[in-house]
Amino acid sequence: MKTEIWDVLDCNGVATGKTVARGRCFLKPGEYHLVVHIWIVSSDGRFLLQRRSDQKKLMPGEWAATGGAAISGESSFTAAKRELFEELGIRSDESTLKKILRLKRRNSLVDVWMITSDVLSDELTLQKSEVAEARWVTAEELKAMIKDGVFHNYGKDYFEQVLNAINACKGATV
Image (cartoon, rainbow, N blue to C red; front, top):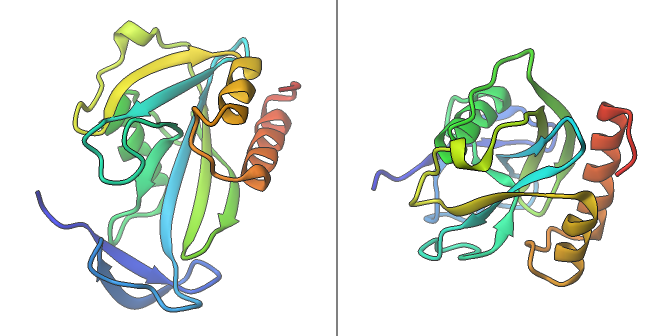
């Protein structure tokens, strides 16, 4: 498997000109790499979630948001579009994929994207090395999964901010 190379960004998301190899470096304070999360929301307000492959080094077998790290030279949009297609087989473009939030985490800037889709679970093309399964859940089911620790714990602030941004984008209550 080819090693991913990431651009090192400053706190504003501007490339510093440095790159690092995934898993072979430690970013210094004030250095970040770009991560994208894509939330797939149906027209009736359900969420398409994915369970990570049991073979994944990070968060094996956990339910989580679709996403991953941007590769060197990729824009946030390009990374989100690539991850969505690679992991689930969902195609997107500038008119369907909307950036709703940027969060600053420990050493990553997380751009949160949203797409409205009513794709059927059995029409998905799962990237087996990344995704074990995917399923639609209601907002209540998602909140229960978070509370019960079944969905990856990105943190209370993360969920509040993401769900508020999705609500604002959809004009609905989650």
